[in-house]
Length: 430
Image 1 (cartoon, helix red, strand yellow):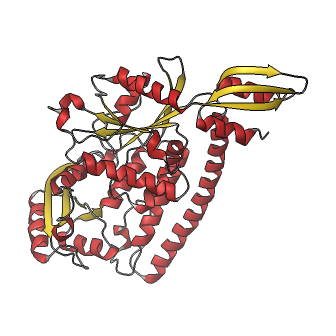
Image 2: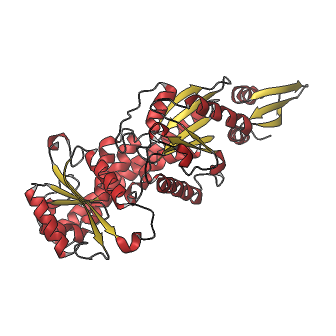
Image 3: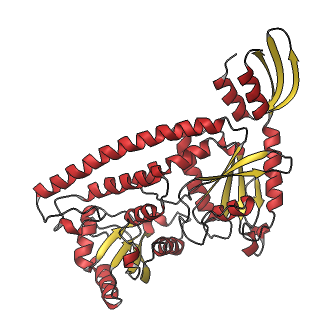
């Protein structure tokens, strides 16, 4: 259960974006777009947004982040609007958080805590819920410092008792550490189980096409439209958190598995990066990646860079192949609300669609079909006549072009995708 459960549907909130104007002068990011994203995040957990503000700063204060003048002005707005919680769209240190709470006389959380609450509310799978709880605890542990006046002001809702004092802080830290150890053990077991499921899926003769993109780009709407599924899709950040897979038949008769994944976001809390593990691994196994972009968004180029930066990090961690871009199609969504798509800066390999109105979806499906056909390789395997399992695997996963049998061996000319070729060579070494 998150901090903002159904019992607090009328919680009034202020959303504050501290904007470092010296750091962002050479940055294409827009402070107004950042504010709108922060409002969307806060609204997604049923907070009533009563005040919003962009605070332009030339430097950050180590004690309170913002200056005294800004604090006094913000306090007046908080009191006049009867605001319960102030959300700062940045990462606050524990001391900054505590000092701001004292100065503003209301609860204060930062971007990390907000996103953790959203993930805690939306995660459905076993691994997702474990990862989110682990992230909550790791974040909460960093808040346990001597500077707290009262531990009951602590975020997270894990039921810690007691007042101030080093002894209580140490006891709370020990409880958290013990729970973290148990969670990591549980997660390792879940990952082993998921690994077995993945190996079972690799025996299924269908290419995988993964939908990725910035949160709220329209991935789930596209997924539902293509597959007839009922994945939760609405104009809300992080509406979908757990990977979902469905079959889809292409015009050529081939069947693919389409995978819908969690949306990316800028400045993802470090505690939550591990919570993306399942989605990232599904993407890593994909034969084709569909990068869905909200082409109507003013920061669509920056959002693209956020997604690509995460994927490049996966390459460094050896989760994703270095040439992932060559298997990626950029899907420019929401062309139905663009006046002139010809004016949009478009990548080399793209297609414009509307997931909502179905405009150009047949062309997208055909593009996937054509790309898979080009990816196929013709390979000859010589396998023992006694190995019926290998022969069956090839028939299930590829297109048999020619077969010659003798007393001891079968010579098979087969058309396979690179991924299935690698899978076959891992399973059967000849």
